[in-house]
Length: 156
Figure 1 (cartoon, rainbow, N blue to C red):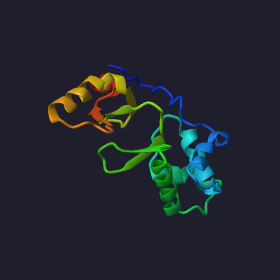
Figure 2: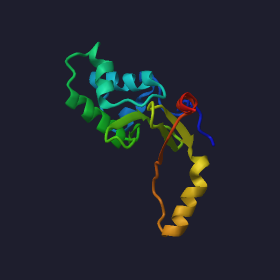
Figure 3: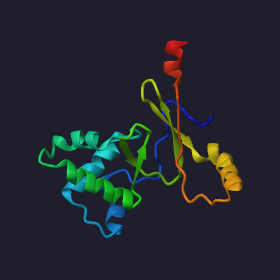
Figure 4: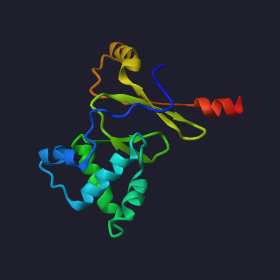
């Protein structure tokens, strides 16, 4: 299986404030608040952040930044395809920089670790879903739940 403990970086996602012309290309202003939120997501690397974690990350440089502003900015980034919002099944949305390639997630039910599984690993299954359902899938993001290697070894 293509999943690894340390996921590959999103190699094609804009990574620095100098590269956020993508924000402006959608007719959006790069406000100070959006820049701080974007920077928090960039600094997170491959970690998936909740809106609360984004707020915690920007609290130092911008303690006046309200949670509602953070949600609005995240919604703008999601709508523009710059950030992906995912729910791992616990009812809490998490955010990550969008990658040019589609990927899926494996979440440890013990420790919460998240690994990425690249689309080529599940593409055959998606093709079978299309064939059996008669639907053409526009977008699919799968989340698998299980036990990571570290937790499995600890209980093993």
